[in-house]
Length: 67
Image 1 (tube, rainbow, N blue to C red):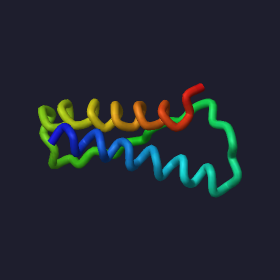
Image 2 (image 1 turned 90 degrees about the horizontal axis):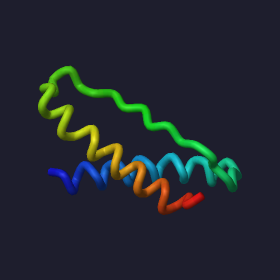
Image 3 (image 1 turned 60 degrees about the horizontal axis):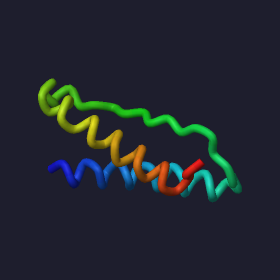
């Protein structure tokens, strides 16, 4: 499950960056990740999944925009 969550973070980051590129943006100083969590998730599930999503998002964003 951990690997899938990191991949989902990378996919999300790629989608955001793709939209920026489509609008002609060549530099990005900051990106925010907004997350909606299902009320059906337990606290334990949420606490396990969200850090992995954030890690995938952050790692991929830094890979694409290293500055």
